[in-house]
Structures are given as structure tokens and as C-alpha cells.
Image 1 (cartoon, helix red, strand yellow):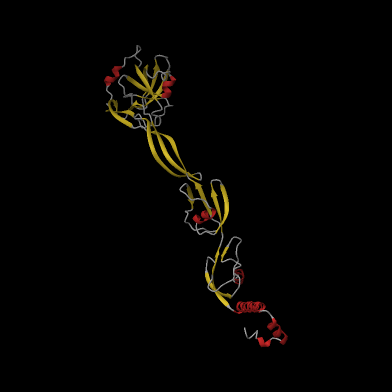
Image 2 (cartoon, rainbow, N blue to C red; image 1 turned 180 degrees about the vertical axis):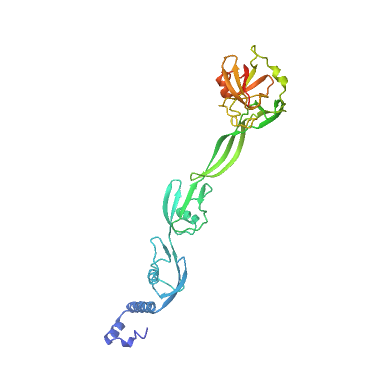
Length: 358
């Protein structure tokens, strides 16, 4: 200081005036001179002195040298670092750099948050979804469902779902299938079946605890099952009686007509239950064709069947064996029985006459 403000360098009139000043005034001049000197020294320091600063951009960390007293904003401009509208810089852009500082940049991530009430955008500086909700002051409790997980890393353009958890009890009814039970019946020929009891499905009531969130089902758990009605099994009699070869004696079971032109006896019919199945002759049974089943007549034999109640007759071809009841002499197809009026009665007395043998 003596180098710049030596008392001997002052003009003579100044030195005289100084001696004439009061002590208080002299002190004031001295302090002003000191302030001026410090200001000049600081300016020279900032112009020629450098400081080392660390810059953390979020993606990389680098060390740079900057002029002492330079602002953070000027340093970022020198380093060609561009800031977004919502990016945060610490310390602030108007702060003067100091040696050893670390300038950190928190890039804003533009995310979409979707809730039960709608969607909105948020510029977050958090690293995770949990941090983003914390920025917004949303309380995170067990009553919400997050997607993705709260600790998942955030990235720009990400959509985060936050739905309220809803738990309800739902009740449904289901049918219980019935069982099929088969019983051997020695009165029926082998291959024949008879339904003794029709099956009936049962019902049961099921209660589930269901958890929904955002219109989607997250959990379904059965909590109660009640049987409303028990199923009724279907009982079927299965024939076990062996087929026997026809004997000439069976011919005598039916009485001959007065004219002696045929054999009279009971006739029955069969239809849709056996439609499409293979007959004893090997043909496929067609309920709409004029065919019949007889115990012993050769396959292909043409016979005329007259229903004594209506007087109507029909010509049928023998292509199957039956009937399996000893009281009946012929089993007509559905079409043949309908042609003579027997179908509606089920069983009726007929006269059978042979027209041609194969």
C-alpha cells in the first residue's frame, strides 16, 4: 500500500491540508483507500487466477479450469452445456465459482402419470417412481397399486400408473355334473341299454374375494363354496343276455291268420337312437328307409307287414336282427312304422307275409 499511496508523493498543498484535517476525516480517507485497494486486487485476482471445478451432468463427470469469480451460468456456456426449461443446477446459475466446487445438473424427465381420474404430465428430477410421487406430495399407502414398481428407475417419456386398490366379494353359481352309473341286466340282450334313471346336474354357489385396480383384475381367491343341490346320477341298465339262434319252434309262437297267408304277432319299431349305427347285416341303419329286423329270416328278404288296427300295409326289407323281446315277431324302422300308423302306438298287432327271398 505504501508503494501506491506514499505520503511523500502527494503534492505540497495536499500534505498541508492533510495536517490541517481532523483525525476523524483522516481515518475516513484511509478506509476508502483500503477499500479501493482491495477492490482492485480482487479484480486482478479474478482476471488472472483460475479455479478447478467438477461438473456432473448426470451422465458424466468431468473436471475443468475456470476463471475465478466466474458465474456458474458462464461456465456452462463455455462448456457448451445446454439446460432444459425444467433442469436444476446446484449451486445456482448466478453463484460465483470457487475452487473445488462441484456443479451438479439434474435433468428433468417428462413423464405421464395416469390415475383413476385421468392423466397428466410431470417434470420430475427424481430417480425413481417413488421419488416422483413424493415430489407431488402424493401419499403412498397400501391402498394404491403402482406400475412399474415404486423403485423402478425413471426415464423421459415414461408412463406411470397409480390406481386405487378396490376389493369386492363376487358370487357365482356353477353346475355340478352328474355321474353315469351302469348296472348289468340279464333280461336285456348284450349290446342293448335301457335308461333306468335320467341324470340331473346339481348346483353350487361360489364366493370369491376379487381385487381390482384400474379396471383390471389383480387377484381372485375362493373364500366359500356352498352346494345348493346335489346331482342325480344317470343309471343305465346294460344287457348281458347272450343272443340265441332262432329255432323253428319260435315260428309257432305266432298264430296263423285264417287264410294261412302269413304269421300274426306283435310288432314294434326303432329309430333315431340307432340311426347311423351298423346293423347285424353290416349295413348302416337308416330310420327313413323301409327296413325291418327279424329273428331268423335271411337278410334281404322282402316281407309285407299289415297293421291290423288300420289295415295299412308296407313292404320292408330285412337287414337286421330283432326284436329282442320274445313276445314280438318283427321290429320296423321309423319310416315303415309311420307308413302303417304303428309309430304313434309303439307296439301293435301285425300280419307278416313273405314276398321274396334273396
